[in-house]
Amino acid sequence: MGAQRNSPNTTATLPAKKSMTLQFLFDLDSKGCHSPDNKIQSLDSTNDELQLIIFYCAQLRLDDQESALKRLKLTQLLSIIKTSITPISDEIQENLYKMVASNLFRSLPPLSSSTVSVISCDVDDVIAAPSAAWQHLQIVYDILLRLISKKDVKSLRGEHSGGPRISNHGPPIGDHFIGRNFILNLLNLFNSDDPRERDAVKNVIHRIYSKFTSYRSFMRKSMTEVLLYFIYESDQRQNGIGEILEIWGSIINGFMVPLKDEHKVFFSRVLIPLHKPKNVMVYHRQLVYCVSQYVQKEVELGCVVIGKILRYWPVTNSQKEVLLIGELEEIVEYIDHGQYLKVALPFWTQIAKCIKSDNSQVAERALYIWNNEQFMRVVSQDMEMVFPIVVEAIEKNLKSHWSTNVQQLTQNVKMLLDELEPVLYKKCLERMEKRELTTRLEENTRRIRWERIEMAAIAFKFF
Image (cartoon, rainbow, N blue to C red; front, side, top):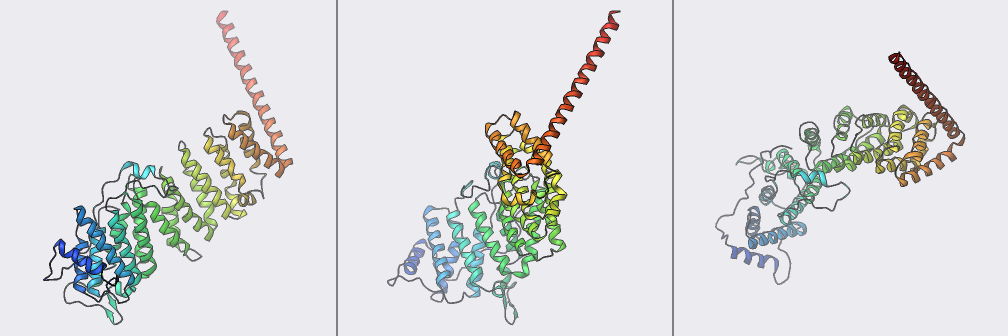
């Protein structure tokens, strides 16, 4: 994600001739939130007072009392935006976006080594590094979502029905609303250590992508650059990859068939290499969803995925092995029989290795794939090619695996396969027994030959 990009001026304009004492703001809050009829003021009541609230919320507040008041003012702003029927004026809207930018677009602390490696994608409720400012940031993100939802695209980009908005002083107001710099700064916030903030950024990016069709190509390109940087240039300790892939999942779901070349390039150059990092378990759930969307749209891509996963198969990372077995199982469900036959041999060769693995979790996960009915419908159509590989792994487990749980699961799988293809299973057993007998005879022959050579050497030395 790199350093923060240049953002537009984020200082809200303070109306002239107004007092900014703390007492005045408390009095203002009493007038706005505790009026006799207990109703929130509308936007057209007093623009100057609303501008004062916006200005106050745009500043950093370190004092506890001022921080509490800032949160109260932000809540009041959110309530006004939610309940007001009157359209927001361009001047107020400009200052609101400046206030949002001044609160959100900030320097983030360096990544902690534990944040990316410890959090699992299955534990969504864990807060690894909660931000002290989240009480304020949460309201600011809600304000931003409301602003994007309530205004039309032309207004947010500084346009009217008659054409672009022209200003005599500086750039158009639209440049201070939703622009490319604004989007880039939002993407930079995916580096936050707080998963609550990353989830809020994801929601904002979703909303902008759905509303700004003209920015979609730019947003896809920007998010692709983030993923490429993570894969090829970073030390692969970066937050936000799962959230970005979740956005991509929604985007891929809307791709038309047949897929465009640029979409296939993203699949082969970004999604497939994302299987290589050691910490893939952090974002693996979102990655599998993206890949499965591609395979469902074009089943030919299933063979590509399976081949690449087998090529990237880990040697010592058992947790990653368990995840990849599950992904292979899901992909096989989506491909047709013809595509399955192309990858059946390497696929089952790897699964057999996993069944015989000394790691009980890997072995159990490899055995559990037989419980998947859809998976069984695909693989059971042509078992003659793979049965010998599977039967050998099963029989070896029953004889020598150290885990009783693995042996019990293996026995269940043996019974299932024996019922499915009893004749074929018996033939595989006979072939395996003959092969074992041949192997033992060859070993005995080699042993006898070496014994004779040693005896001859001793006899030659003696004489």
